[in-house]
Structure formats: C-alpha cells, structure tokens
Length: 319
Image 1 (cartoon, helix red, strand yellow):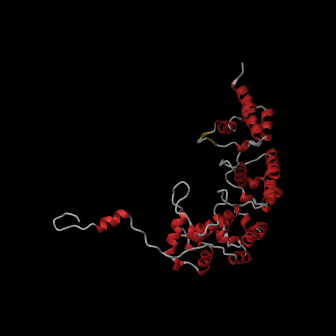
Image 2: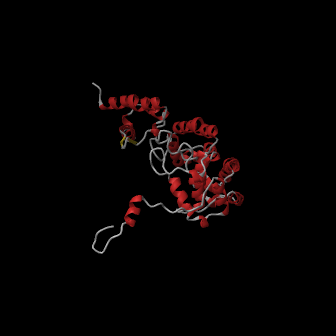
Image 3: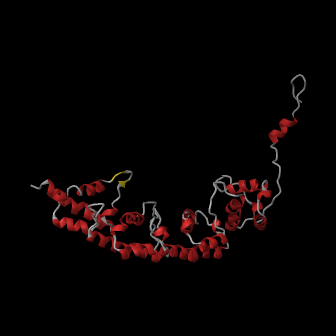
C-alpha cells in the first residue's frame, strides 16, 4: 500500500514536473493565483520546501533541474545554471529579435495575460546577487534596471543608444515632437516609445547633460500636467481625424454610423470659441485641414418659435 510519502513523490512527477514540460516553463514560473483564486499547484510547490526530508534524491535532482528554489537566501549551482540558461535562450534573444531593452518587456501579453518573461525579469531583480558576475553584466548591458546599475556607465550608454536609435529617429521620420508620441497605436496598444519617455521623466537625474539637451531639442516635457493644452488636443482630435479620413473639418459629420455624436465634432465647436488660446502654428495646421472658425448661432425649433409667437390676452385667452 502506497504511503503518504510515496504519493508526495509521485505527485511531484505527475503534477509539478509535468506542468513544466507541458508549458515549457520552470517551477518558479508557476503563478500564485489562477483565475482569481489560489493556485493549488503553487501551494504544493511551496509546501515541498517544508517536506524536503520526505522527497527522494531522484526527485530533488529533478526539481533542481526545473528551477526549484529551496531557500530564498541561497541558490544552488544547478539553479543558477538554469537561470543563466534561460537568460541566454529566452531573455536576450527577445531583446535582439525585437531590437528592444529588457525594460521594454510588456507586463501583459497579446491575450491580456501576465507575461511570463516579465515575471522572470521581476524575479531576476531579487536574485542578481546570487548570479555569476558575467551573467549580471550581460543583463545590465541589455538594460536590466536595478538601483545599483542606474548610475553605472554601461546602463547610461544603453539608454543613450536607445534615445539616438529609436526615439529621435521616430521624431525625424514622423516630423513630430516627443510630446506628440501617441499614448495608443493604431491597434489600440500602448507603444513602447511612450513607456520609454515616461521612464525617462522618472529617471531624469540619471541622464547625461548631452541626453537632456538632445531631448529638450525635440520637445521633451519633463513635467506632465493632468490638463492637456488645447494645441495637443487639437492635434489629437481634429488634425489626426483629418489625416485618417481625408474629410475637411468644416464638412465633419455630426454623428457616426451608430447615431452617436462624434467627440471630434463637439471639440471642433468648442475650439472655435477658444481660438485665441491656440498657437499660430496650430491655427495654421487647422486651416490646412479645412477648419471653419465661424461661430453659428443655434437655430430655434419650430415648437419654440410657435410658443414665442403665441401672445396672451389680459383675460388669459391666446391669440
């Protein structure tokens, strides 16, 4: 008859290791929550640390092979080797293929689920002190963000390289300023450049004077207010709408195909009353898009006109 210890060792192979094989992941990738509830596999993995004396040597070696962390303060050489292997086989290739840095890895994947590579990077930040120096140097070369590496020359060079290879070329190709980088792209996703600019604002103290001067030249805004200027909103709602549809602003329809008023239409009428607050360059761009600045009075309905034309006599009767 199988004992509890036998069932424990059997479950390690049939549940834990099998999960790693099926998902092509390591044990430390097991999510803590599953569908908003506690993941039973995570709890099982966590309890193994307390019951290591009941695990066979064969299973311990197998667990180490798949990245089992027995103690937060010490990592085995086997575990270090597998972390390094994953860094070189998954993390660095991702950066090279996408021509991006580690801090560009999105938190969520295309399906809206938590990105396992992002989780792996978060885990690495806590384990840098246990990794070999050459592995840590490789991570920092590709933009691994830690409090220690922010002030190091290698990290500054990585940020400088991306400013000159990604950010500034985007401004030149699109003939736009850094502050005009859209928050969402055509597919409704947040572009990496927008996140990069946001990161630069938070870590401005770590940038070189040359970087700051270059960013200022291309319209970098270091402080962002909640209330956006009318000029930015004019580009966002009107000029971009004209570029997308090709319809002159003065011919803009009031409602869309579903019968809802266009936000752009309402903002266009609002902008007419605040023309004096716009920059001359913005007014010129709007004129090119067919903006009509004439403020037209609202026509009164027939019902209201009839009521206005109805006069009352002293006796209360109407004429």
